[in-house]
Image (tube, rainbow, N blue to C red):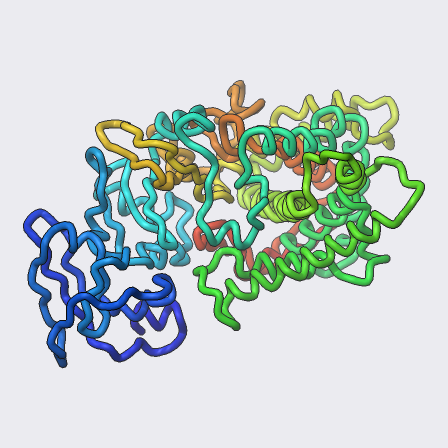
Length: 539
């Protein structure tokens, strides 16, 4: 199968390919089918030069440098003003670019980046290039040149220079999926405003006063219902548990009373999230966009319905939004609010459910860790005046080994394989230049699995976190929750959900793996066969 067929699912076009022979010093010498890129070019200007018809691959002789910088060859015609492809492998730079390859025009190295693998180590795409080029290298993903950093010092520098030298940025396909007004694409005042809104709902005070007891109740009810089954697919079960709780808190959504199944729309969305971005009917990416559209329609309908529901107090996020939209000069728009809601719902249950599922698999595979974890939580029960009372905030904060398990799980999970930024100006780093406008991908797995930073990095060893400052946040050596001013605002909520779930699990139940549990990365974490376990009440 050719690269064209693997992307578009149809045979390649028939026009001949043309080899470009450029002046000395140019690194471009590729054969490609330009019609492949026609849809990316738009209208093509009239030809200024006609080349003789040819029946096989030909060489176009060198032309003046100014003309070669901008041209497209299509079936023997020379278009000097069409900006594409020429010097793809040798882009202009006011300095020295990092080593690496930009791969094929337009496609870049995207196919290699998304290639599934079963390695628990640094992603093969990154590892091979680090071995060849070093800790900083250039590549091209979904049509954009990107500098990849596996250097923890440079990563930290990128995070700390947010809004000065770098800004949050994600490839165009990301904005199509999560919305152009998603929180990851907003900057300055609007980002800070949305962050403050989220903290009102999921900040430390809300966790302590409102969410702790709700999370415990949700976990207890879910485990109780699962214990009556022959097996439960953990990822799906935990996703449903978290989604129902979060959706209720955010938008007062009750799946049992709703006409539309909002979670099913997200499931369809997630199924194509990590896929090659070709929007053709039937592709995984197309199904992903359809899932998003369905979910957004449900959210918009719920917001419209809420606007016409009088006599409500401010009890969830939609109420905050409606009050803001009523103002004479509202800060929020409905579009921004809906995109934020979509991202919050997705992030709250998808990433956390993956982490919880992996934690249970790791605990099942490491009985000594499970024993230590169980002892910590049984001690909490013994020290209670009333064994049947719920978890207190003090008890939650005392779960030291539990937090070590959570951080070790997050380190190995590497649920987010890359964190993206964009250079706002030409930036000199380590003898290289990152050109203005280029993307930068910080690679957390390359740091989390670096043997120079973590001894025996592939082993599950929660004790390595004992006394570490990362337990209260992030650092240049631990980026599971991001870094800098965009450190994940849902981190505390995620940790609370995991800790409380583990407390309810190990104090009242044991579990037995039934099937599945195999891990695949594309490049994000996934369980292609699920992870089916039997939940068994303790005697």
